[in-house]
Amino acid sequence: MAEFVAKTSQEEGVEITSRSLVRFNPVIFADEIVNAVEAEAERQALSYRRLPSGAGHDAQFMASVCPAGMIFVPCVDGISHNVKRT
Image (cartoon, rainbow, N blue to C red; front, side, top):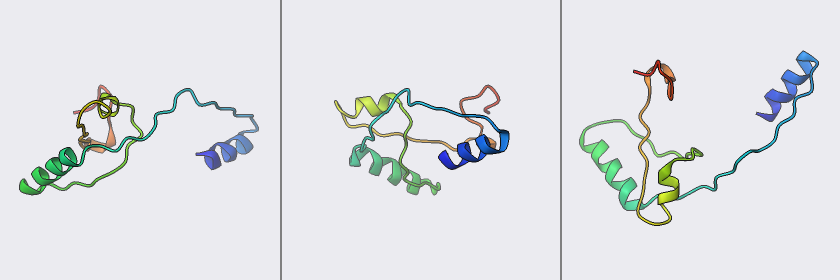
């Protein structure tokens, strides 16, 4: 991102500044939840992959008080959090 911003700044002849507004620490989700989701995906012959997320979701905060996990579902054409989402 820093490389893109520097390049854009130079190409456009503008100064670009940024500041961090929020920082969420990474969370390790419960193995029993992650393994259960993975096993069910395998049982249904669905593709899956484990991936880290920097998204600030409720599960991130709940993980400190109970077992938690997250499922990300691919969206058509990568459109997510949008009224065009199907």
